[in-house]
Image (cartoon, rainbow, N blue to C red; front, side):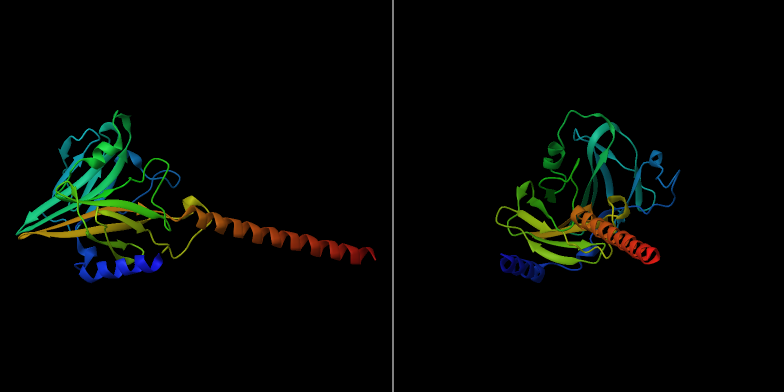
Amino acid sequence: MRGVWLAGVLAAMAVMPCPAAAAMHWAPAPVEHEKGHGGHDRSAGKAFVLVDGEGANLTLINPKLLEKPLASEGSSVTLKATGMGNYHALLARRSQAGLQESAIRYHYMNGKPSGTSPSLLIAHEKSALEIVPDPLAREHWRYYANTDARFIVRFQGKPLAGATVMMATTNGTTVGFMADADGNLSIPLPEDFAEVKAGRADNRPAEFVLTASHHDGDSRFVTTFSAAYHVNPEQWQSTGLGLATAGGGMLLGGVMIWRMRRRKEDK
């Protein structure tokens, strides 16, 4: 099975336009300051940066599919509460000289229950070419390293057979994939974190960006999907267990040495 997967990867890379990392995509804005005891100032909203997005039109789509234009500050936007709880879609679109580009990212916002399922927003056609999460990592589940994330590549609302997709991570991994005849794509998120600490809060997430490209007549379409992925709990839990075991061994060794010394003194 691994040989088949690797063959598909190599085939996808052979036809994949490069560099994929240069495509327009969303990323979290760097945190400039913290408030309180190490916590972020959430009252200011969540900020995102549109990388390589000059001239793009920015839109926020709420859970009921209503679109609202977004004002940018340079290359960044700040998402504040809309009063509606659930996932929203952050969308950037740009058209120029036979090239149509889009960048999509999903973000959860607190508020009154929307009364809709996130599947409504995910199924909604947001651009001609789109990488659709199947399903979206949400609620109590995240994108984790060393797990498979599933997607569907669509063009004009229909699955795109044999679509080529490039994945690039902020940890340095770059690899290509090819969708099946139904546009389905299963991507193994890499275990490429350089350091794993014991505890969820001690391990910062990384970012992955998926880029798909497609030609239709004289037009070229490029789209990206970006999201955070986290250290697999098995990694930091096993690290914590290892530290606990090592600590326990040192403590036990100390007790044994102390007992041996007491025995010598008693003699």
